[in-house]
Every structure is written in C-alpha cells, then in structure tokens.
Length: 120
Image (cartoon, rainbow, N blue to C red; front, side, top):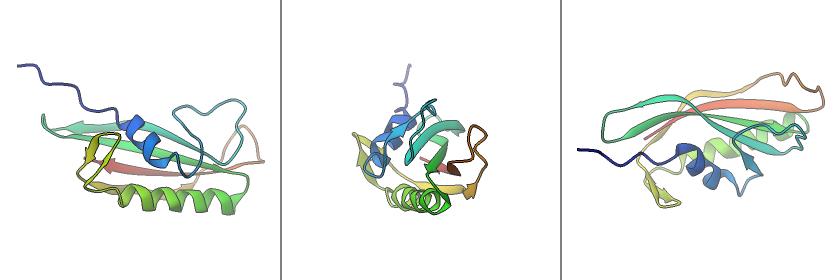
C-alpha cells in the first residue's frame, strides 16, 4: 500500500507567518528586512504523522526588530496547535531550540535571530 505524501511543512509555515513579514525558503541576495526564512532541517515520521524540525530565521534592520519578529513567530507557531493552515492540520508544535541571535556574515547592517520548532 502506498500512502500519500506528507504535506510540505515549509509551505505550511510560509502561509502561517506571511502576515508578519515577507516569507521565503532561501535568503535572497538583496535581503531587505524585515524578512522570515523558513526551512525544514530534519525531523522524522511514524508512518502516520510527519514530525518536521523547522528552522525559522528572522532578519531585522536592528537587534530589536529581529527579536520582536522572532517572538511573534514563536507565538504564532506555538499557537497554531489544532488549527488548519492551508488545509493542513497541525496537531502539535513545540520549541526545539529557543530564539538565538546568530551573526549574519554577509553584512553587519542586519541582525538575524534563529529558532527551531518541531511540528506534528
């Protein structure tokens, strides 16, 4: 028996976070903050439920904007339990690693805060 593929967790989070700021799956060369980058960076499944590990990088013009955007993302992700996003039911969401400031090598003009979440 062939099971249907799991929903694309990246597109689910893109739809969830788009109201906060522009969302992408790859950091553009012409980065203009605020910006949210979403990437699946691992996870597992049990044959019934997908458990993607998601990285959310929030770019801000300064530290305050990056941290505020990261907190808004955290609130939306953790608050989306038992809701449908673009037709996909999110059963569970938890923080894997809380928001942490990570240097952005391309320029000193922007700040980046990265957090990891596990969805089901």
